Length: 193
Image (cartoon, rainbow, N blue to C red):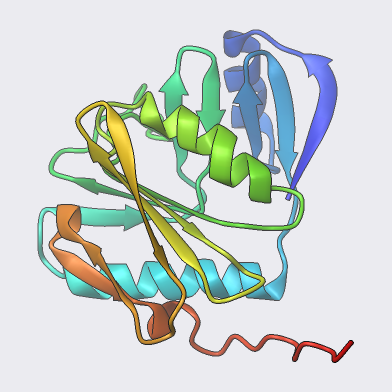
């Protein structure tokens, strides 16, 4: 969930202010957006995905980060995905190690206030980060995951809606079973018309 803060800040002002703040904020072209708390489903989906991927990485050269890790998209955009992964040596913007520059996978779990932003704006932002090879959007309102993978200058989209589907994360040399992502998640039964 995202709330716009009316004050415009320069990148330097944002980074200094964010370092002192207890609440996370995304920064898009001078605008600051507070990252408010998510629902139980949102939190569980992000945790389930983090655990499922992290468990498979074991002692590989790849590692996962939670939503506490900020990603620098470009010179005027900083975002906090729900999950990110990096392989090899992590590159950070500075010695504080709070802003990752070279993720290869980013994952967003949708909320009602962010669904369009996650599917369109953030997809376009992540396309600009050369290291990102895959972008996964997990829907918290139904069983659905959209995997965008980089193919030269465009993204290829694969949609997974069957609980038995397994999402191939070739860039991490692992798979993400949808059943593990949605483990423990219940949806309201549709009401008859």
